[in-house]
Image (tube, rainbow, N blue to C red; front, side, top):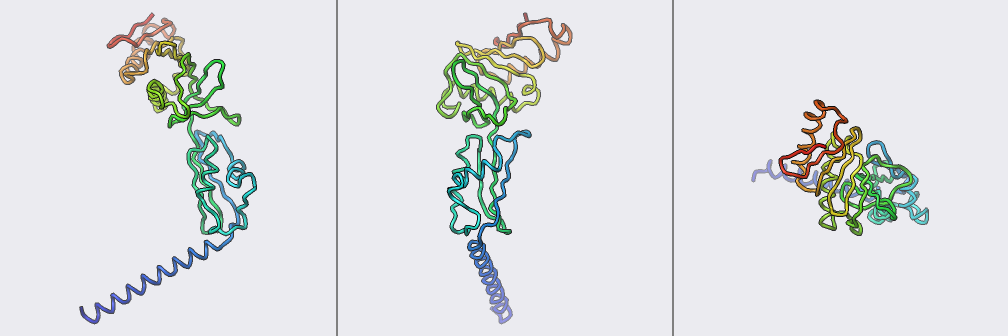
Length: 252
């Protein structure tokens, strides 16, 4: 190695150590710096907020029993604060960290309800996009399909804990992720035999869907009914449309 090459290696090594030292110093300095403010960022769900900054701060500070303002960052365990915020069933994820201005930042991702379960004699519940079972929130009502059920198919904490619940979750997800069907399907009735009737938002037909399976094929047939049959026969010519049989659409 030439003298020039050795010189360059020494310069690069010194520069690296200097940058590392500055980063370490900044980290120590920020860790010893007191928190000046709390900033809460809540990701809404289609303009709906199931919590607010006051509730988030209340949860994070254990109802003001554990102050954060004026406390050094290195004295705070962000994981504990995140866990407290996530105790709200409508909080899917919480991230707590400090920015360079001395603020404690809290980023909250809300759960997204995709259906509301109605079971006579029991409290209504929401089902979110992960299948989690959530209580009805008094703060806001989510505009989602109502699922009326004669079956006890819901698990302890997640719809997917039972086989039938998994099938229903896949059906609800299919509807929620399709712009047309999410606007069209207003009400699902889960009957005692496991078959499902659907009630559209606009037209008057009862859609006899059958068991929650073969989703692509059944919705394809239903789309054919809406696009090709109703425009010719009239939107209220039929009271029922049956999708249960393979390669058939039965209209009455």
